Image 1 (tube, rainbow, N blue to C red):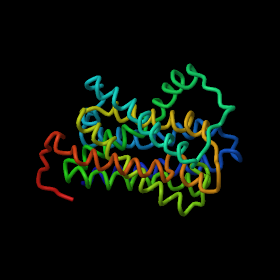
Image 2: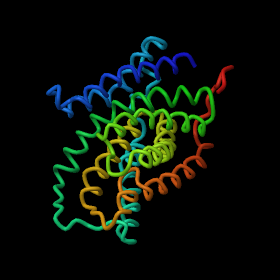
Image 3: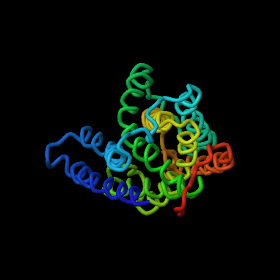
Length: 267
């Protein structure tokens, strides 16, 4: 338990530097792109440091790729749930389709995947590489996901409150939707990590989620009314509902996960 607490403290200490730099990047003349890369690697750096201090190695993070089917599922699952979410949005008039959007396959799929994997891996080495397996040694899968999801949500709060991330709707509703959505998203991504024994399916899921929602589905979708900003986006109401459904599905699959030796400590 102690190393988990140390990891969380270290993550937020390192991230506080990133929060300050990205909020004041314009005044400081610093590229937000570079600062965001640093910020997304703070959980990963903290996980690496904590693992080296307590375990003297990185074997627990799950850096081996694992079976190909989990890598494929990690990459394509976001495409499936995003297609379902935005299909509902378009079908019921909660958002329209932007006729001026031009899809560049090489830029979005090839370069976008490389770019987003480089960023998302930093977070995933921390959240799913270190935090999830260490929590899972102490408690149930459901509690592991709820605790991780809340921590992961709170980590985003400074970016939302400052208006840098997910700034389409008022801060109050956005924070609430984010907590529910991110916590629900933690179930499938953590299940993949634990079942595969590798952090890479989680990294691919995170990267694919960011890529296809932020670079394809959001740009191709237009607002059709004042309600659209609450319905669309990666933490809109429609996506939140789908993630709750996914959370229930993967929670039901928890019995397929490897059994952990939980020792004497419980939470």
